[in-house]
Length: 330
Image 1 (cartoon, rainbow, N blue to C red):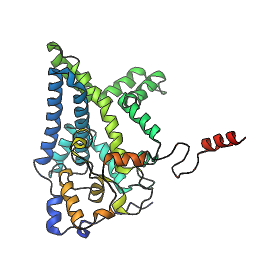
Image 2 (cartoon, helix red, strand yellow):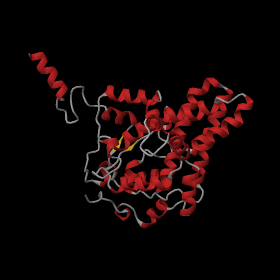
Image 3 (cartoon, rainbow, N blue to C red):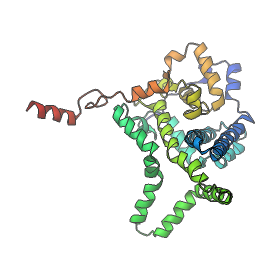
Image 4 (cartoon, helix red, strand yellow):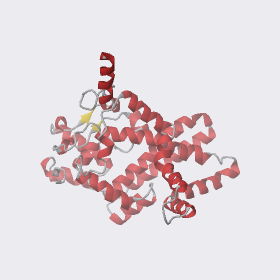
């Protein structure tokens, strides 16, 4: 299948407008990474001093963990710093890492957005779903079930029945090697904090947010970006959705302008901090009504969970529901 239709910046901006939008700042990208870590450390310090603030800290830290992933995403587009070598160092070493593999995967998503070859199509394909189904997914996220299924269940499955030619020790060693940052961070943090009586801090203030709040807001972000966007959508202004985010949503759900996702798909090399300006210029030109937008995350969730029980995504009765009707008639 051919690649998804793209837009040209010259169709929407003058050269004088486009130049500052596309420019990569020498300090803004590094500052955003520093900001994420400062917020994480600040929230953790407050929770250590006042443990009653732990639930709030989990939400703030989980959102900044997503923020670091968003900044790695910017680095995958070469948008975190004008020097591409420094861009890759920042994006790989000071964020969750795995930049090279992620870049290959993610650029495929942009090339084939909402097409059959889109590697992220499975994230949007199931929607709309029922409200009950959405609630179940959120509960699984917040209780750590999603985290366990994605990060740990494959390991236990392989350890339970090692593939031919592999040993349990080898499987475990490979798992630790592939996730060395996670384990090294745990070891260093526990070693530093345990002598002061805070050996619990890493578990409560890094792993807990990563296992609960982070999966939940990642799911909500994915829903907002592409849920209910038709497969093979031909309009490049409707491959992704921009969602208005208020201050609380930017703090707890959508950091670093990730909500401007339609603009990002239109101009994927524009740094995240320039997306609001691109949005304003497009609005001034009357382009916004043609774009896929939503007034709030709650509005998107209503749309994504609008399927009625007993109906498929097309509004038709499911085989299970038809079977119930036949049973009642009989």
